[in-house]
Image (cartoon, rainbow, N blue to C red; front, side, top):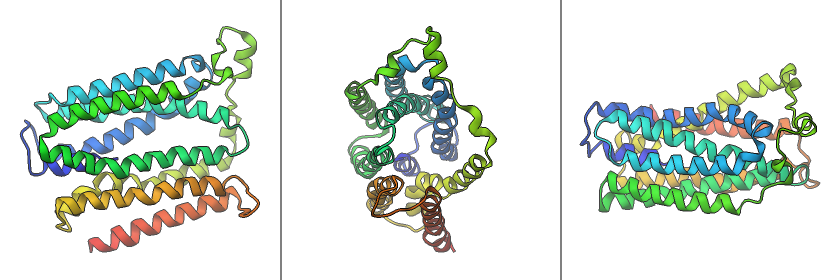
Length: 288
């Protein structure tokens, strides 16, 4: 979420071999690896490897940390793409997928949507604080030292958080038992409903108004609108702050509470329209 800070730094402090323009694909590659690998990881840890979720999350934390550490020794631009864009992203996906599944098991019915909303709010809290943390480290050192500090932060916080997550009893059942295997069968019949494909297309379109601005906002603010480095970093923080409240709020709306009785379709429409209008009005029109 904060790679734009690094990209803006590289625009004026380029010491690596290769084209500096290639750094533009690191953020999108990272998002692509995470989001494209998650459906497969969710399928694996829902049934076959459910009892290995904590181990997988720990492996993801180690992989992400080592990837950031190796990235600090990069001498060519493709080293950054491989370590930050691919390896670190896959490590983050390994952390997110099994821990999210465990969250869904603890909240089967009541307040499940709120629980997911609070979890996503934490992502925005990190996205609001990290731009200034990374900018401060880059200003006082260079990207190599910054990445080493970030590798240390990633390792300590991720591993500690993983051990704090209680393991649901259903995740401890070995798949060797025929009964548990049958009970954990993935209900693939959802693929026969047209609603699933409508939501899938809607999510793809909505993500276009979220992922791209998030990745390039810092560079856009500095190079196109000619804002200072501090202002560009502040803009990235302001982009993430509303998500702290809105993620939990939309989870609250989705829980069919008595105060706001809204259907899932209505809640989804509110989020989609708000995202589309924001990207069009605050991003699209200002570039003219």
